[in-house]
Amino acid sequence: MHSSGQPDQPQKTSADQVTQWASQAIAGDSAAFEKLARHFWQEVFRMLFYRVSNQADAEDLCQEVFERALRSISSLRSPENLRAWLYGIALNRSRDFLRKRRVLAMFQTTPEGGHPEVEDQGPCGASALELAAKRRFWQKINEFLMGLPRLQREVFSLRYVDELSIPEIAQALGKSQSAIKTHLYRSLERFKKSHSLVRELREEAR
Image (cartoon, rainbow, N blue to C red; front, side, top):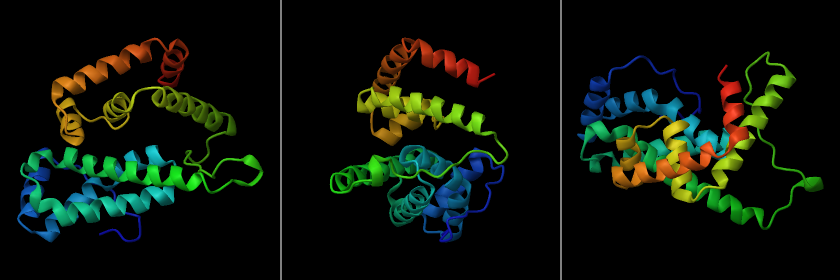
């Protein structure tokens, strides 16, 4: 396991190879699980960082996700569902973390009424103007998401931020694919009505 919080960079790996590693890990092969951890680490880390907005917390949570996955992988019935299964663990762990953080915030105050420090993840050499624009854009995305009901928010994030497929989202959330499509449709309808956000998204993509 990556105790340093700095995993190896994932290599190009076929879906069949990942499924084979998952089958071996389910059967108790620790070396195969280590390969899976290296392959999915950065992807799961990005998903967690997007939700908790702190690199150190995301690294700790990512470590916990893979530790929990190692303990329970023998219960995974379908090796091809490993990615969605990992995301399900990560979602539950991030929810628990954010719930506890909200409770702690009730008893703590930030000096001078400020906000907790969020580490700058901007690219090296980017201008202050570019970084400020990106922060504004993601702030608006977050504001839009927070205005959605919980399930719509999670489905929208998993589809368009984490890029999971409809079947993977259904597996991660324990819902039917038809229910996922319904929540996704409703969130998209609300997104289309956010004209300023849609305009900024188009500008960001240029």
